Length: 95
Length: 491
Image (cartoon, rainbow over all chains, first blue to last red; front, side, top):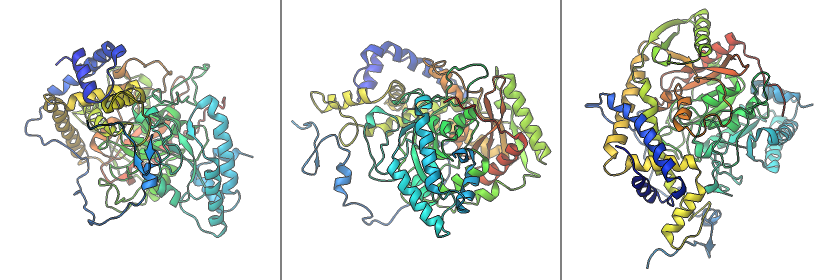
């Protein structure tokens, strides 16, 4: 399953990273190198094996459905690149 | 009078308690030494002298009243991955430029509650992606150790390279790290320090910048196994804010570090004997076996048949989780924003400029293995192999109490020597990554020097929830090794 430069363009787009034009060939080579190395997993018999999602089995806890935090608007906004009157300012996204 | 900086955490806290030295004097000396080392070692990314001295003063007040916690008054360095309120926290990425968290991570909260004094933020690989501390936006960390007769700059290891260097150079009495594939244990081995990660969920990930959540383990760097036990004790415990935090009481790690290991069964996994492994690593490993035998342990040969698949599995799961976690950096709410002609282009430019090459490579890799058509072949397959690796550990721990292995396949290498070859860099974690995949506790303890005079470590791995045996065996190896080497001060 070799990755092509077009694939790299497509996944960069999916990942919202501007097309790495000057490094496209290098990146494609590196990703193929890593994928080739990963191919060895095909040697492992995983028939009937449940996918593992967590190393230590404990039921996921649920907390009471009550307000436990909040009311910190200014803290939330403190690191924003741009704010105005208590709001984040972002580029227009709806035409 | 700053020679007390070379004391262990256990010794300095005893002196602080006895009021032989003040927390303010210790903090001032540590700050001065850390700041003076910056030009040479580059171990830190931020200091906040006022905060440090205010915390030291509060410690002195508690100590004067005969109060204080387990690590009262000791300056601790914090990997730049942990949020420290009001102090720049960037995971050493350009994309988090200027980010000052308005909250405190759980691990640092617990350390401060135990009396720790914040010393500074330590340098690291960008988003903890690296094994040599060469991907940081703030430049390389330089290992305080140098090879005999050479002044070549060596890596301190990564990703927690700054924390490892700071402890090795006696700039602090302990430091935090995070270990996703070996990012505590590998740098500990490269710098002659003790590095520990507990069971997955033992120390909370809340307030630590997320990398690969199912593999990330916070833990300490320390000068001795006992110090590491003190720090692990202080930073562990249930955190209701973190859904994978273990809802369990923390055992007495400090007592465990002094417990006898007589009669323990130690497994030596044959798959860790790699082709092309340097002779001196093999010799060190054998010496470790003899030390544990002499301490009354029984040695058993064991097999972890899926070991060779751990790294390829890791390099699917890790980028997959990283690409998902790092989707949050969009330039809207915090960090770097590079304006484009519309919203999408603003995202794309911010992320292209904000993330370094290794981070972009992992995001692309992760996006690929999670994308339609490849998900089953790569990601789902990796999750299944991950279970096979876990089953190896479950099985082997039916016949032994702990595993003994080398920590790394070599000592510290020269900066730049592995750049440009991702797989050769990834292979650094070959002995450490399995413990992250299985979520079991693991420790690296300095055990000797290689022929160039550089430190090498031995690793102890124990079953989930049994950090106590890990600390006991680690302390026994430390006693037997009598490792008392320090890097010659050149910085």
